[in-house]
Length: 179
Image (cartoon, rainbow, N blue to C red; front, top):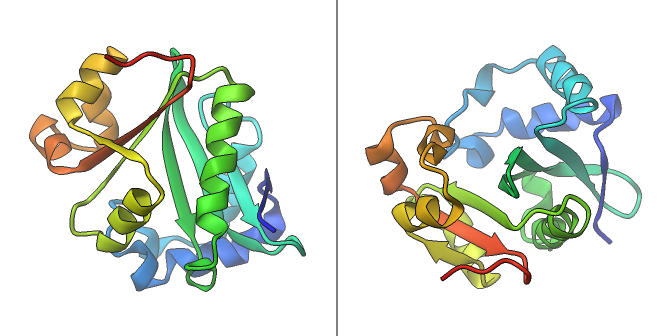
């Protein structure tokens, strides 16, 4: 059974494990290979009081850390979704269930209307996963228009041309209307 909970310092070593696994971080923009246990511990500490981002541990039925799921840049009814799982957790249903739980939390507890994220087209595993689970792709320009977020491309870490390169996904609350 998959559960979400606050990150704990005891998660740091397993968090560092995925950060140093090239198969996990290959398509990520951040330089995780040079992260240290101290970096993980500081991230966990900072996540406890963060009001613009929610970072939760994905755990199994015996409370073993399997990955991190996040809602980032929470602002004006929308948030960016992110997830990273340890290789050991991949293909076992943890990510799919964690996504459902964090999206439900975003809509029902935080009152969000939209949750979006992006993935590199060459990250075939992630693209297959999101498509298989029925998440809606949307062009970057339409996403910006619908969310009234012309600054959204900054969250991709690059310029507009780079943002248009990614595959973007959008989930909307049943109460939200996208035309």
